[in-house]
Length: 93
View 1 (cartoon, rainbow, N blue to C red):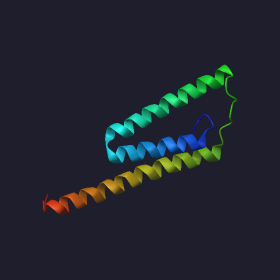
View 2 (tube, rainbow, N blue to C red):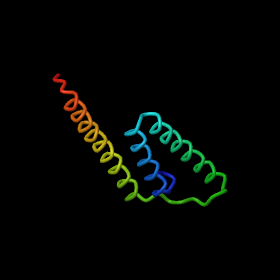
View 3 (cartoon, rainbow, N blue to C red):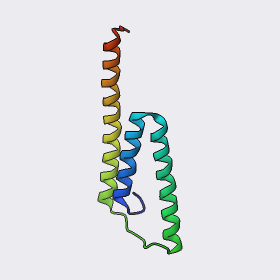
View 4 (cartoon, rainbow, N blue to C red):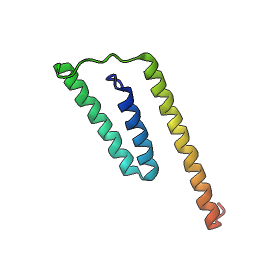
């Protein structure tokens, strides 16, 4: 996102959340790929291989909002799954 690729950043963010909901390892793999992709893109920009893309402040704010919303949604879905699992087993804690 910081390199000016808003769409790619959102796809990686959503992929990280979906991978984390499925299992921690896929989410971690997508997050590590996102870090590598940002590094490689910045390196290619600095070398002049690809053109520099200015980062929009509005896009950065929207991305942070999506990040916070995604974390809240993750915990909300985790609470629902926990309630369904504990209700299905009849366990009382």
